[in-house]
Image (cartoon, rainbow, N blue to C red; front, side, top):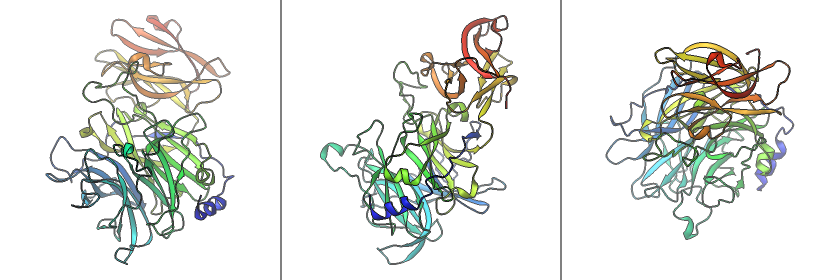
Length: 485
């Protein structure tokens, strides 16, 4: 570990209290906007946002398909008014440069403010943008580039990559390489911590590994430290993540991808033949003291999940945390806002959505709803489509795992009926994600719930009645708190 990393670790507030668990609001299966800066084509896509909040204005940079015929991935920018929700126009602010190392595409922006000097031109700048770039399709051997700006719109590129893949062996040339930067500013100047994915050094399961590097000038970096990728509940954090810092508590936050469906038996996917899931359907919010992270030895504390059951989107991936100009989210705590890509397996459906974490009860109401036209039920502690009418609240489930609890999974049969299951593979159907946790045994203040089937409609529902209200019982699911929050 470099001297700067050690100094930062020693300065951290390692004994700070952990943040509270997350309860999410939104996005109710709706994107924030349609990208009016793209061509009128069904092949458009939008993902990997980076965000800075300045007063009542949010600046959003993200990766999307650029204007035809020459551009593939480019970086867009637009603003959002936090008071009204109104958006400014979308425009392309960074694109590939012909006959250079990033001549094919640029993507995955990570933007931070500070005081920077570009060694290539000697000028001073207030913004730095790190990005993934490549000179080939399908995009092997990505590297991380850097651009500078004084307004966040007009960017001047540094001519060479600032972070390259660590392993240059011939056998690693056909992999993604290094990219997907996330970052925060440690000193308000040019002292940054930059996180990147690298697929050339995989020693643990997953798409690749995440490394953190310190830089004192934004351009030259200390040796990388492999980031811990396991949470205290055993969850494995995947790349395609974002990071932010709470400087008051010395906590690093990450919104990280979690393992996806896989699309191999016994897990069913939406379109396994034509478009297998190429991104995950769930992300987790985690926190860790900065010193433990920089030592490479800590374990992440889980704070909650965003999955299909919560958002209503089949896929949820490529997140960006709302931060201030230096990459801190302290200004907005206890709220945490995440922007991300939601959509279906086909990238042309991916658009930017947002969800807000609130800190409230450690439990969530388990709600039952009915669609009158066909008698189908939907039971969830998360998203329920608007054509379902509320029927009842069955009790409350725990948001996070506690001793003696087990996950309750939200599932769907193709595009049809929804049901709950204790099976993590959803009995061979589509997994929407954990809707909460149930007690495996009776405890004070709880009551059992049962899965039921209405043969006439084919609807699965949940009831507190062991006789399933005169319908067919499919067995107990566990115990919920009798008083909903």
